[in-house]
Amino acid sequence: MIDLGELDPDLFSNLYGMFEDIYIPLSAENNRVGFGRHRNIVFGITKPRGGRFARPSAATVRFPHIWDELCRIGRVFEPTGFSFTSVHVNKNVVCGPHRDKGNVGNSVIVSFGDYEGGLFHTKDLSLSTNCRAILLDGRATEHWTDEILSGTKYSLVFYTHQCALQQ
Image 1 (tube, rainbow, N blue to C red):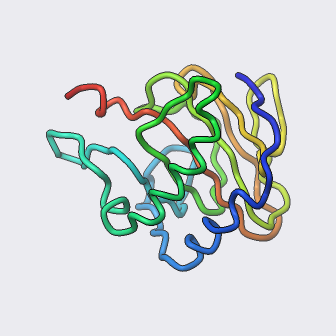
Image 2 (cartoon, rainbow, N blue to C red):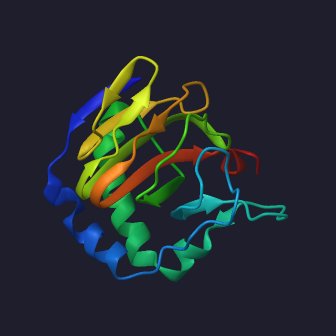
């Protein structure tokens, strides 16, 4: 795991407004163990349930301007050699200890918003990801977050989806 450091909060100002203008759906019951019901949406390449082929997510097709903005932000991480096919967006998500399933290689997690709480944890680290990017292998590293005490927290997980490599 590598702390990529702090990012300028202005980097996220357009995206915050875009997210506030759309409905981010509530997950189904028991979507993932340790998560409870939460709001999330996926941009980029994904494989629909029961689908045979990877394709742009419904959110990417519906909100291409948001995908473009996510890609603009993601390019900040290119100097590290990081690349991605997808971005998982969470709104006020509190998650229990877990490992990511569909990711290949490293992911970058960063959050932003006007919130308190919601620290990011691994067994070796606890820190705020508010405008701070962390590079980690989410499949190999168990991670979780604390309760959000107040405000709105958006977290972005930039990753390569395994289905994008299977075609």
